[in-house]
Length: 310
Image 1: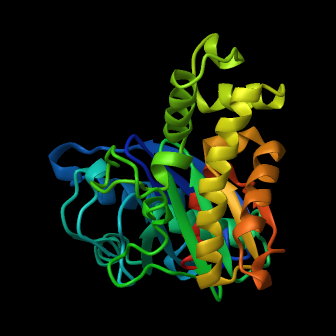
Image 2: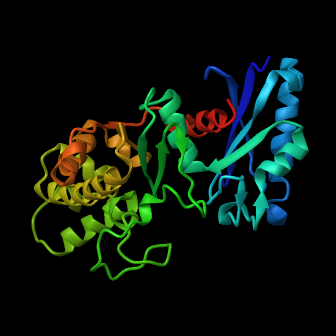
């Protein structure tokens, strides 16, 4: 009987690993370093080694394991192939096939943000929902879309790349993807700072933002203290994000929209202002879709990876 599965979340500096019961109970989690030398050749063998070591420690046989799920930073197609992963120094790699050969276990792979969305839908902020949109607001804007309980990866592994939707056609600066006007430029932590700097440069108004280091956190801290200039910045951010989510909702019609990533630590004030702007732009049938905060934090990836094989 298959009782256990492994969830692996591969990052540029560390690899998060989880041993799960197939019902979603996390038995144990640990980390190993990511070795990106030699085109990341050691990454999958290192994962295989730590899985085999854990199986020996826990006296688990292959017959007890349903499989290994892996989330990686890059576009992964439905077959578990990735054309490249810059943060891992990978070129083309068939992740699922290689991991199966290394471990003798069933293996499935997905994009890390998509996998995090699956984790939140399984055991997180959208538990029980089958149609979910997750927006992860960090240094960039990532995302994941779940339809009928499954990840939407798309033909090129680019499903859920909501951060690169064009939301500002007049934007002159370039996004890291090479385009201009991406949601990531407006709604990420760095995007919020950009909006704040423009507001500060264009106004002589006194503000808490003129004191100390400028960051997404300082913008929301000032907003919570009713700082007028910070309020305008938050309104701009929320308008971009809320309108974008309303567009995505027209396609997916989600039961729940989740906000995750470092910026989401601003909490309920952030959720409220994004919900307000979303409602203004949403299709009538979707206006009451709740926007909630993700709850699994850095564990979302291992949960979602495990769900790939559980």
